[in-house]
Length: 107
Image (cartoon, rainbow, N blue to C red; front, side, top):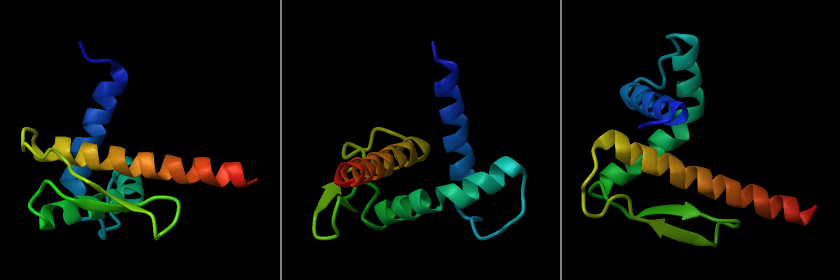
């Protein structure tokens, strides 16, 4: 059984996936506008994934531009496009969390 949070994330990923080609269009509901504003970088990473065959690698920058790592998203190609977008957003979130963690240690 899915939790409420899981269902909300599923709906958000479906909504962002549906909006991925209209991010520059500044019309829509408040939720659509929020997704367009905050989901653009994830959609850009997803588009990078598509350019390299849909599995990767997609390059992420860790704490410094010189420190990079390659992420492979669903290399066995078992998941649908929305699930791959979800994996991309998870990778983006992890990188952002790492940057925040490292920045907070500096202070």
